[in-house]
Length: 170
Image 1 (cartoon, rainbow, N blue to C red):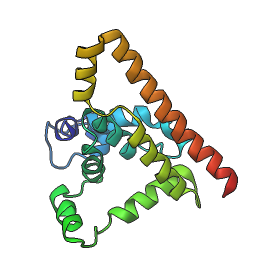
Image 2 (image 1 turned 180 degrees about the vertical axis):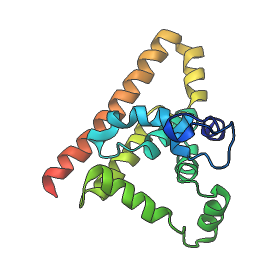
Image 3 (image 1 turned 90 degrees about the vertical axis):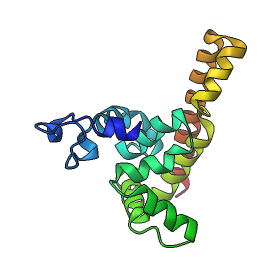
Image 4 (image 1 turned 135 degrees about the vertical axis):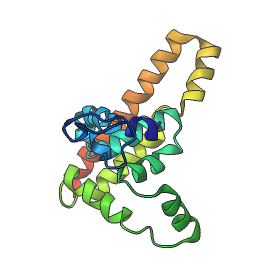
C-alpha cells in the first residue's frame, strides 16, 4: 500500500513526474498528500505530521506496518533498518529524524510526550482490517462501524489527553 500510493505523483513536487519515478519525493505522492490531509486531526495530540499520519493510515490495515511505513516515508531502506534492529545495531538517522519530527509538531521539551501519545494511539485504535472484517461478520456492519468509530475516537481522546495534560506538568 505504501509503495503503490508512494508511486503516484500528486502535489506541487509531483508535477511532471511519472508513475513510480524514483525521483518522486514521498511527500509529493498520493501517500504523502492523503497523510497531509490528516495532519490537523493529530495536532492536538502532538504528532500532527504527515509521516506519523501516513503510518497510522497503513496501521489501520495492519498495525505491524506502522514502523515500516515511518521508515518508508523518510525514504530509508526498510530492510536495512530492520536488519539493524534485529542485530541490535544503530538505526542510523531514524531516531534523529523522529526526534526532529516530534520536536517540530509538539514543541521543544514535549517531543517525548508526543511520542508517548503516538504510541498510545497506535495501541488503542482499530486493531487491523482483518479484525474489522471478522467483527462485521459476527455482529453486522452497523455495529462494526460504530465500534470502529468508537475505537478511533477513544484512541484520539487518550492521545490528546495524555499530551495536553502532560504538558501541564512539564
